[in-house]
Structure formats: C-alpha cells, structure tokens
Amino acid sequence: MRAFGMKSSLNRFFAGVTHAHRVPMMGVACVALALFLSSCGSAPPARRAALTEGEGGTRPRYSIVCVIHGDGNYLYHDSRGDKHRADEVTLAEAKTVAERNTQAEMFIFHERRRRHLLLFVPRRDGTLYYYRYGRLIAEESYWRDRGQSRFDPEMELYDRYRAEGSPEPVRLFLYFGHEIPEFGGAGYDASYKKRTFTVDDLADGLRRVARDSTRIDLVVLSSCFSGTPRTISALAPRARYVVASPDNLHLSYFDCGPLERLDIGLREGDMFGFANAFARHAFDRLTEDVQTAVTVAVYDVDRVQGFLRSTGGIYDRALAAVEKKAPASVERCDCAEDAAYALPGINEGITVLYRPPRFGRLKHKESHSGWECWKLLE
Amino acid sequence: MMCVLVYAGMAAAQGNVQNYFNDAACKVKAASDPSQKRDILVGAIQDMSKALGTVQNSPLVSKSDRAGLDRLNASLQEKQDELAGTNGFARVADDQLNAFSEYVVQDMEQADQTITIGVVAALLIVIIIILIA
Image (cartoon, rainbow over all chains, first blue to last red; front, side, top):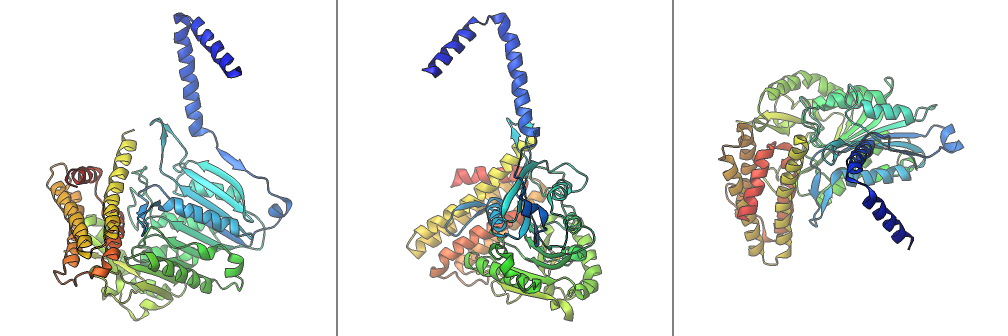
C-alpha cells in the first residue's frame, strides 16, 4: 500500500511539472547521472578490517606477494570441455593460500582488463586483496596505469599495508600470466596496447619487494617460456630460487596446493627442498591433465651463475637478432639444441622435470635442458 | 571507445576459435566409433585450415598476419598428418583419439599465446568458420 501511495505521489508530481520546468530538470538529472557514473570510476572502493592487537604487533613469518595478470585472453578448457578463465581460477586458489597461512601476510594483486561503464567512464582495473594471519584485512581497487614504472601502483599499496618489524620474513613472489617478454613488451596488456611489460619490469618489482637489500627466497613464475638465460639473469640479484617453466605452460598453471601450509612445508626452513616439492607437485598435476609438453624447472640462482656467465653474451646477441625479426620468423627451442649453449655446466644448479608432448613432432624428445633459447626459422 | 570495441572483437574472435576446437573435442569424446571420432577431428581441422587459407588470401590481412596464419596452418597440417599417419608421423591409435582431441584444443590455446594475428584476421577466421561449419 505504501509503495502504491508513493508511486501515485510521484505520478502526481511529474504530471504537475510543466514543460518549462522539465528541460532544466532533465539537465539536473543528467548532471546527477554523470556525477554518479564518474563516482563509479574514481571513488576509492576499499574495504578494510581493523587489525587485532596480536595481528598488528608482530611481524608474520612469511610474506607472499602474488601478481595475477588477467588483462588478456586467459580462456582455456579443461579435459571435460568446461571453460575457465585462468586468472579467475588462480585468484580463487591464491585466496585459499592466503586464508590457510595463519603465519603469513599475503598480497594478491589481480590485474584485470580495463573496462568502461557505458563505454565512456573508466573503471579501476586492479584489485588488491591483503591478508594477514589468514584474515582478509583489506580489499582495494586501484588504477593500474598510474605511475612511472609498471609496478608503481602495486608497490604503493605494498608499502602501505606491509607488516613492519623484525625478524625478516621468508619472502615468496608469485607471478601468474602469459609469457613475460624479454624485449619490447608492447601489447602484453590487451586493453593498454602501448604499455609495455618485460622481464626488466618484473625484476624492478622484485627489487622493490625485496626492499633493495635482501633477496626473495622463492620466485615462482607461472608463465610460458620463463626459464631463459635472460629472465633468470634479470631476476638473479633479487632471487635465491626460481621455479619456472622454460617451455610452454598450460593455463591451468602451477598448482598452488603446496603453498597452503607454509608452516608445515617450510618447517625445516629448507627452501630448496620446498621449491623442489612445489615443482614436483605442479608437474604431477599438469601431467595428469595436459597433453602438450610439461616442463617445470627449479633454478638455484647462485649455482646457475657459471652457465649464465658463459652464455650471457651469446644469448644477448641472439636476442638482439631476434628483436629485428618478424615474430613469425623466430621460434623458441631448447638451448641444448644449439651447440653454443650445450656446455658441460648447462645442468648445474637446475632440476628439470620434463614430459614430452603426447603427440606432435616432439613426442619422442627425451629431455629438456631447463633452458629455453630462440632460433631463427628458414 | 574504439580500443574497447577492438579489444572486445579480438577477445570474441579468440574465444570463438578456442571454442570451435573444444566443441569438436566434446563431439569426439561423445562418439563411440573410432572412425567417427577420426572423421570429426579431420573435418574440424580441415574446416579451420580452409578458413585460414581464405583469410590469408584476403587483401584486408597484413603481411605479418599472413606469416602468423602460415604457422597456424602448418601446425594444423601436422595434426592432420598425425591423424592420417603421413609425412613421417605414426597414425594416432584409435584408443588415443580422445586424448588427441584434447591435445588439439590445448595446442591451439597455446598457439594463441605465441602466434600473433591481428584483429581483422581473427574476426575473418571466425566469420568464415561460422559460414562453413
């Protein structure tokens, strides 16, 4: 009854408005709508929970930064034919990791594609989920394109929320996305065609997470072709161990399961052992469902330096040549196929788990060196 | 606004190509007779190859897109060869056809990440696939 009465009143009100009043009223309505729409794009949409006394007073044992790139085509189908978006699946897994680690802080940055309300009003395209001791402390949307360098917006949020104090936490950095370019990098973000992203930007992000003085204990690169001499070299000053796929990596990515209980997985403090267990688990899960090649490698960054020093110049020259070629005239290949890289130390400091594709011309390839290079096609 | 539309077009095109092979894989798994499975796969790959060939000949497609399409076509040709057991490939066994259909889907999804083609070419492929399928 009350609703009916209100409707009648409104009808009477509008019926009483003369044409002379209608035009200015429509103007007011348009301004109000514009203000409403612009508020959708610019007001800081943040939710924060207060830290309890215990949460704020001590520093978590583990600090995890997870970047999930979703500004591109991340569609894949599982073996049942069901569609998934890799970034959405990974976000759900990362939240589980954050909730189950009751001795950690975890930053999850979800980089989404740029959207517009009614085609014109831009909306925030990044979301931070910040967890401490398994509890969601802050959820905040942000603009990804504000700042001089690629990770400026993320690092600003990182500095705002990170726990202070001592001792230094065990640090992990996780990246989920498409192949991180070694040069160029324009078009990595589907909705920012001119923005670039390369391994150097990633290295800069690691430097800032590591606070300039320490190294990240474990870096996980869940992306295609990350086990290259150039990529590992770029990350080397800021990483102790790297888990990466030198070859193609299916979009179901590395399984995050082993990260869910770091207090158990890292009880002995053996990061090398943990990195190997993580890689083994990821490999086993991928080989269950994936018919294409599966390659997961663990790089002990200090121990691969000999190989990187011996081949760095060769690789850089190859990269410079590849950069000048059209994308269709170059191809990735196992470095071991090129005599220039097939040195005695190629396997030093690296654990490789490899299963060839079940079909195709490489199905009989027996091993992978763990290093991926480039070759020019005829 | 143009960027928004181009991105939407590109995403739709990529999604359509991936769905196309996924639909074929679902049909392969639903079929019980191996020869029927093989026919579905051969038909799907041939139709896509035809679509790529038609797009390659279009004056709207750039030179770099043509090179990308060449690589996609070569990859599809290898799959046809493997199905048929020609050009040095061992013929895919009857009991491996379901797995092979998944391989085609996954390999095409990965090709989408490594082989770059522009929005015009991608949209043309989708239009032609819809017309000939």
